[in-house]
Image (cartoon, rainbow, N blue to C red; front, side, top):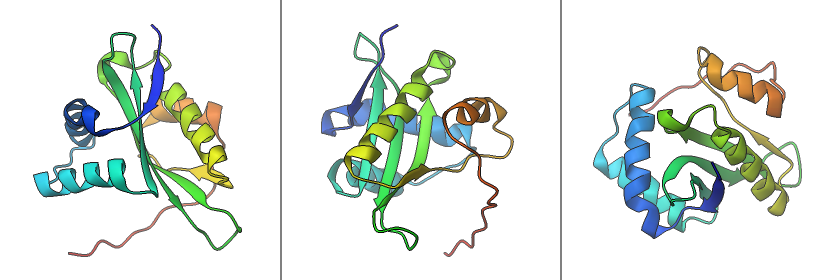
Length: 148
């Protein structure tokens, strides 16, 4: 299967929404339509939030990556946070996630970022098997406080 990676644009909205809902279901999460609509608008319109998608040779969307470019206090150049990475379950283990990550690396380099980083669920061992091949695991532990 040939995989091509392209930026997300308005014409990808329907395919993206289907995968977005599958992604939320994977993480046993529900978001309102307002939040999903806002997320989509940010991906296609915000300079600092980018979306990439993987397509097969028939133009079917196989997965996506959402990234956030942001300044940081440890360097003079931006960081690239890989906020969401998802591949349709029918196309896992075919190189789609690796292709998306490699495209994120290229995009980060084009934007002169000093690093790409992400977090994953502690029990997502399948994803971690790939992540150990394409990046190094840090010793950091994430904490957070939600509001609202």
